[in-house]
Image 1 (tube, one colour):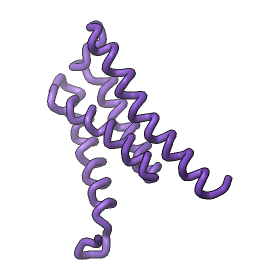
Image 2 (tube, helix red, strand yellow; image 1 turned 180 degrees about the vertical axis):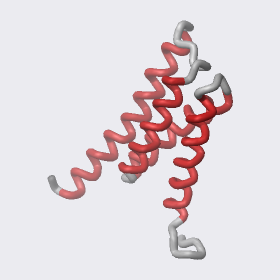
Image 3 (cartoon, one colour; image 1 turned 45 degrees about the vertical axis):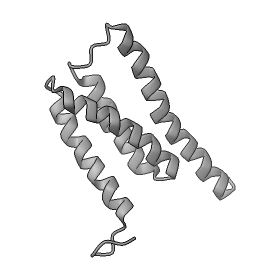
Image 4 (cartoon, one colour; image 1 turned 135 degrees about the horizontal axis):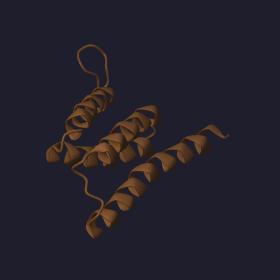
Length: 110
């Protein structure tokens, strides 16, 4: 489906998610908990976008949101729940990108 100027809705949604991730990255530098929560959601979205084949956008989202989560003073890694949650979240998001790369390589025959 195309928007008014011929831009597809997926590109518009990906652009919006990158802008939202940038805003959350700057807000996560202060211990603003909702921004860190949105960064967690955007990491999952980055994995899904990578799985669908939009690898450049997904890698940009992974970079921005990984920096936001790791650099945030609001993410306390001294608790056991965080130490369980973060590796699972990063595995899902980076795994989606790796599966997307594998799908694109198998489709091109390389």
